[in-house]
Image (cartoon, rainbow, N blue to C red):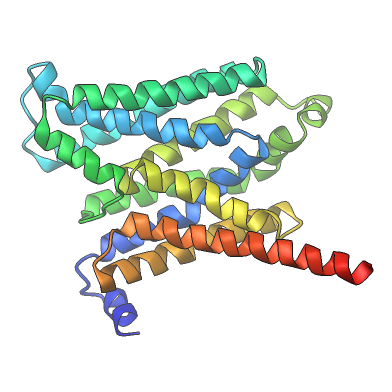
Length: 294
């Protein structure tokens, strides 16, 4: 209780990190719902890696291309955002068009994107130990400090994403769940696909900048998996996925602060425990119903 009161106080030093973590926990599961509906889970793995490659490229650009290392924090921060979001959007546009090909071929491309992004990140950081350490901290999801500028950039970007999903939820659901019906209703399926993928790419890029690719992927996939079998409606699916992500992000931050543990790893561990318990509960309930019928 004391830890909760401390992190909720106005003078808590890491309050920006808490706010951003909870925002990521609330919003990433929303795009995860659509990724699961479209059966493109590998997209949630590949895109965070592409974003981290963009960050690695910016962190080491002064070594490989002879540019001066940005000494002003704001300048470097803008470059990092540009690198992560830029590469993510390029990749997501390419993948949006490639999805129209055979599904197996599309998944193969996603696997190739993941492998290439990881290998390229390691390679370009090989000659820059300082940047490599920062990138490794990002991979582990270590949130040490978030400036006011980072906070507002993140909230602004994610706010646009939330507004678009709220405004166009019906169209996104239709093209994700029943493409044939969308075509029958004369919806521009390619346009809505592209907008959906752009929002997914932007969200993942922002999440990777804050919590790293591993934690971003965990928040995207695990909360929807937990809530999928517990609700019947699409709105319930989105609401409970977001709620689970936000609550786990808050609890993970509080426990990590209290016991001096890595925030990102603890967040995903909490989600994993809830996922396992959910599956066990469902299996036990099905067994109980089956035995009762017999």
